[in-house]
Length: 509
Image (cartoon, rainbow, N blue to C red):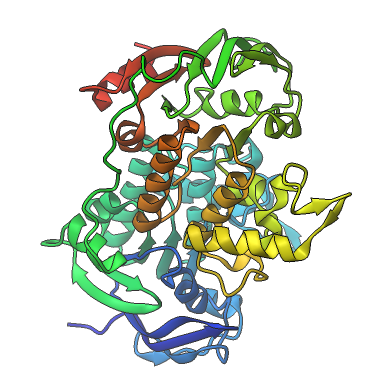
């Protein structure tokens, strides 16, 4: 048997106060799809950044070989010349340029020193045709959905004749049909001898597409094994270092007639008017203290628009009424919502939830500066109290960070999400909106966030949970609303409910 295409041996990488990788060994064969799994903070991203020379030779210990020859990559271009293409979660495309221009960016075919646009689009079209992709070559990238952008990024990488393709959470924002297209492309590449490192938290995808899987935990290699014969329970146990008996906490579902009659939040006849037809039309619902209300629907159904509007973060016009504890309230901005005891954990934590360059303590107290008197006095922040409260939240939520003054960008995705949660919990919300709260985080962090959500509901917080993962909606919700094209098409008490029941309403049938 031929040797591995890639071999990384005894890789050790330190950051100030943290050992991110500790004597890691990892290899990939030609024509293999090799899954790389582990909790957030396990070291996956650091290992890939070493492979792609984001962390160049000299900043880590250990050896990296391609086809048996040692490599000492000084920069990203060195890694690309060796046939390595890394596609990160944040895509490296120029939104204002066309698909064809992006595919050959920096490597445009030229004639007499001038870019040959005709040949550029011809070559790009041939690449798209190879993989059966119907993407407009002359259309701007910013006119594409995130799924098509992801596929353009892959074609761009393959145009360099990459021998090793690295995909970091490639399906986090893809629809089911787009995932099927991606997996079909990866199968074609495997048949051509191209290797792929597939990083994902979606363990079902490991068993659908991968040949082997390597698990990292706390910066160390735990296991490398064939997917055939492995199980999800085995992988979870290897990832978290313990058996995870259930992803969803056991709790008695909220009883509609219990405790109190007045809803914590009530919405009447809510409609939005950014264009015709409205994105949301005649939305009516309520959520009571201690209840988890799930909101399901396909992409574009209006789930995020609904909670953003109620939270005062919608930029367009809207009509309708919102009641808090039975009293009509005017919410024109997020500040108004916070004052009414409403909090929103947004779906895009990096864009809307955090200031990545600022530290953990700064981010943790950001939303409560005007609501918590012991943190601010006469507009001045009490740094001692800020540190004390942030430290308590970090300890309570089990956030892993080098220090409270470490920039949030240095934290793993799961720990960043916990900082966002901690920020909003510090406002002591009465109503908590959770928009895709476990997207892009590992199974252990998911279980922790699910347990925390249940604890908050048991403590009397009214929770509205938006999720595109139907097992999460079914596993956590007391009642479920289903949206289709901006309208409520179904409402269910979560008893003997199936995914098929929800999907029928989500599809508008």
